[in-house]
Length: 336
Image (cartoon, rainbow, N blue to C red; front, side, top):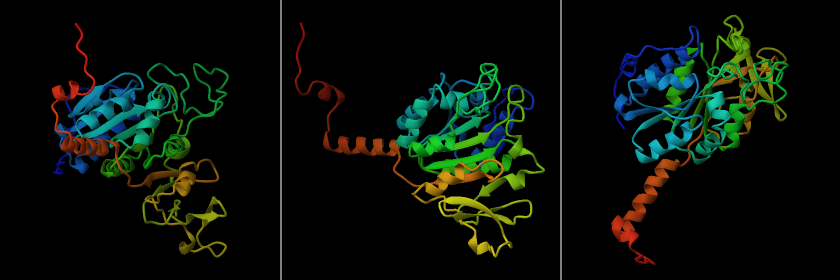
């Protein structure tokens, strides 16, 4: 695959971008253009696949190959594209409804198979395109068009679902942090296998401010932690807070208090095969723990598309038959 110098502009086309003013999708699109330029794969060697939803309009704004498919089937189509042409860089754009509801079965199996595609999951915890119904990631008690008295369900956590499907790569970002989002996308593209990048995205119409607790500039540093492989898990406005293991739980401590030093703080190992700590990191939230951002898990494993290609080559080297010879071999009957 080519790795050349490109600019973000080369991945944009001339289509007018049509989302609601202020929608987080604009920022994600911008981050994707920048990430693709940094990855260095030519536009004509890139395919962007989507299902149905506000996020799924994104392929229209890419100067790459694109396919706006049907509801929830983006993972299946992306799998077919990658297996048919393994040399393509394949990206799937999806939302929490498209991916986790009607597309949930396809999602868990593309992750399980470890097909070498990059899934960008826009999570605004609502159905935006169909006007405000609760989605599989909507928090319990949230009032929507289809839950006027509050939802009575617990939501999916995308990271938890990814790990349950034996996922090898998971990253998380905020739509307002374009640099972090691009960083996660670049790492996703470099990973061989299914990569899932969840972007907490704001819907200004039906769930405005849904992620404000973490996106607010004044408090973001104290409420989120940017994880980097091989670096200490520290965070905070003064970078004096960190994570340690207290028994089987992650605990927030302050460096310099109670004899806690920088050496006591955990070092992030995104490449650890055992996902126990990754799981705990991904599920942190609320007032007691920061929200984990950045690449949480990045583990090497055989990919589905590469294994299919290898198997076909091996069989062809042994069975040198034409398609006609194969069809006429074995128990063949002539029907008159």
